[in-house]
Image (cartoon, rainbow, N blue to C red):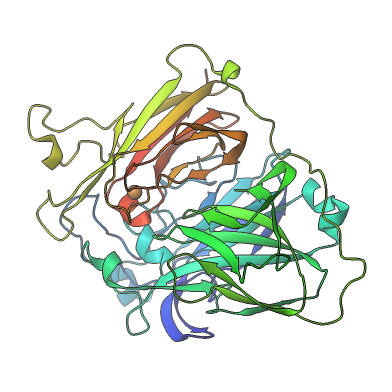
Length: 472
Ligand SMILES: [Cu+2]
């Protein structure tokens, strides 16, 4: 990881923190049973001198670590451990020309891990947003059963990684005020280019691995023009978990961190665009061109479901319901970051002064690395309901739990049929504000890790909780 000059076709050269000099970082391919060994050199400059304002403001912009988002792997030791810090050289180290520090990650991908599309990014509290909007994110593909479905095996395997960059004069500005996010428009790239062109033939089926490697913006994607027979979309997986059957759809909602695997079939020759609602420029242009495939490539009728479903009857005893509230208190703190982004309800971090003004309390509902918010016992099945009372329409709070996938059963009180596995579940703000309910079984791995809002500015400001997976 270094500062690198990167050419963004359609935008220009930018200077930013990268993995191996590219945006996105290199695509990693693994299989269930593999061990993923990664060596991380921190070639970034020394961190700025220590800051004021506590740990729930941006800090340590040149330290990082590694999160394998969505993967069911150990959160402990040298694996998917987001509580580690890969620090750069100190100013003294740099002056003495000591070598750049090296850190190692070793991740055992368990046998039986679902095959699908995952991603990786740094996850050090205090520097996540600034690093991800510089382009630090890449795709992890777990290969396996779904790839051997004949109709999918025949389809071109296309990564469509959407990165969201925040740039001023070709650089990511230091994250020094709370208005930083709203003050700079996002630049969206697909596989490192602004609006690249993808070609496909009439009748050809391609498999697109859509990855929302974004920090701030939830994407509601559609293909334009939408005339009948244009470019029909069929979803086969969400967040790395293959569906039991393909699902035709017109729009794809990807909150920050979500993935969707789609089968896309080229129709009549012509030009289409992949667009996100509210984003003025197309993300990608699709040219359907060349001789038609006759007959058109077929779509599968059934799929090898990535995970077995859970049901309400599996819930383990009383007390297995968690009610969590995402709540913000604007303008309550002194300094450059006046807004409090809190997680309240079951397991909330207690107030420093329980008798005082909770809206101004610097602890209440905010991240405290020394406090365990949720103790989760392996083998148990629980039901979580997450709500937001957020009234600011632009504030989406995607909830993300590390280590175990969650089965989304209800959105805004309405049952999903069938329920859908996720690792990140969006909670749209506005009136009425949203709620989601999911079932989750804690399996295989013990250790401390986190649950948090995947609006990563909120996360850096403390909208995060610790979870402790323990043996029963
Ligand atoms: Cu949030």
